[in-house]
Amino acid sequence: MEQREPTAVVHAFWTRMQARDWEGLGALLADDLVVEWPVSAERIEGRADFVAVNARYPEGWSIEVLRVVADGEAVVSEVEVPHETMGVHRVVSLWTVRDGTITGGREYWTALGSDPSPQWRAPFVRPL
Image (cartoon, rainbow, N blue to C red):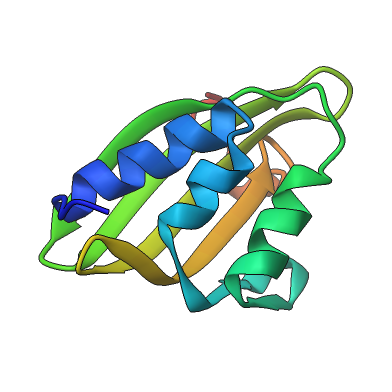
């Protein structure tokens, strides 16, 4: 694979995910990739398992990249993932990109509004 800047690699990651280009997605990932999902307390070890868990996710979703920012090999993406039956999710992903390949990540997936605002904050906040 040609050498690409870390932000370009992460943009390509989300483009291939949206296209369901699982082979192309895998080409962006290190063999020994490790991705953590702290919200569900899961760790995915290896390119094959990461691609498989995403390829088997129930259909009906799309991806809108909201932003991608980088500092060297550390890349952060914020993505909105609406699903036809499961609602709208947001994910903030913290990626490590080395030599044009994603070597690791930590993703925080949540459904919009899934953590209701406590009453005491009502005078200080407005709903999104």
